[in-house]
Image (cartoon, rainbow over all chains, first blue to last red; front, top):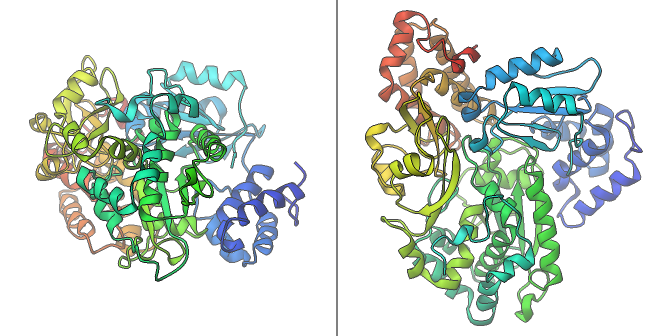
Length: 169
Length: 435
């Protein structure tokens, strides 16, 4: 990671990836969403400084880019922990015990939805339907989907500590 | 030739099929045939004759959609084909199966479809969370370039096609085709007014077709075996097979490729194994969150577009969500409305402000704080928000579908909440999440 969240410039690696997207787009601004995801993959989230640097790189105003960044739920404009827990709260998972699992995770980690644990390990977020309703209830931990959840399985997942960091573009 | 063409390469373990495995079962033969023997007009005729209707939820005839793309070369420039792989309709888990298990089937379908409308650029717009599918699709595209199925002068035909994977950054509204186009242009995913339709003025103002994953996966089989064969796969009025799914408190939730027109009863009782012990069927959403509830009296209906339409609902995505007798219908509808309220793009007032209002009223009723007038308020919201034309796109009218049918079929449940000033299901886990 060559650029952190306070960098007011884009790293060479970020620029290379963004340039690759721009190479098959009609204008630099057209890749705004891809570019936000690239910056987030490198820095974990998109700070004001990161946003300003990226807007300048794409030739657009920071306000316009922020309007795009804040529209999309998977662009994080606040810091997140090392892993994001995305617990599905849509209809089938709700029928099959979402509220119980939500309470269990909150109790175990000491955080509510939208919060990050004190040790910065987990951020706990609700997710819209994850497209695995035949195995409900489900959640994602980073890039990994976990299905047929119950309290026991949650404990195993949170104890194991093995994970993929989120943010693949 | 299989009578389950979409899933010939899909096994119970859901292993991914690579390009060798795909070619071993006849993959890319349809593309070779098309490029060697058929004109774009021939392909369009074949798809029209097949009776294929869009599998993303709306059921629009695919051939007719394609026929609106200008085929003269008066206006030089790109034409685009976009695959909508933004599967986010709650209760829907069918495209994931096709993407993760047989990515080449989709890509072959896209190449043939692009050839038919003479598009030279194709995008797969896929939701961020489908990491495995994104990885497999990128590999599949690279393999296609290596074997001459993508790029310039495909199989010596003179046809050129570039294909890109765009992974999204969330938001259900991206599944609406004009919102998807806005998002692909790097903007907020606000839907656009129609007309002009995307077929004439879509991505970057150029002719664009947006089709669902499952729709495109049918294309190689139609071109290979013909429209009549495809028509005969259906056992009712509609053509082809469909991935149908059942989720909720059934013994064996899952997704199966079955003939169009398969009876609902067969889906729930045979394939899904019936209700879990101790639970009774109270109702179901036949095709995702934005379809009207149906009830046990509809069990013998065929899963066909028009049959389900006449019963007052929609086939939608064909993946049904079961409401059991121990889950609160008011709580379930509140969950659905809250989803749509959260996912509103905010562009038009009835949706942005109306859906949260519906959620608030439902929340009051669900928590025992409802008053009799609340039912009238909900009916008015259904009338005004649910009417097509009162909102900028179909999101809010879709949100009203489960609400209006719940008010009809589960009126007693709403009344009990209000009269008893409490949720009668409050001992069940489902109800604990209110407020």
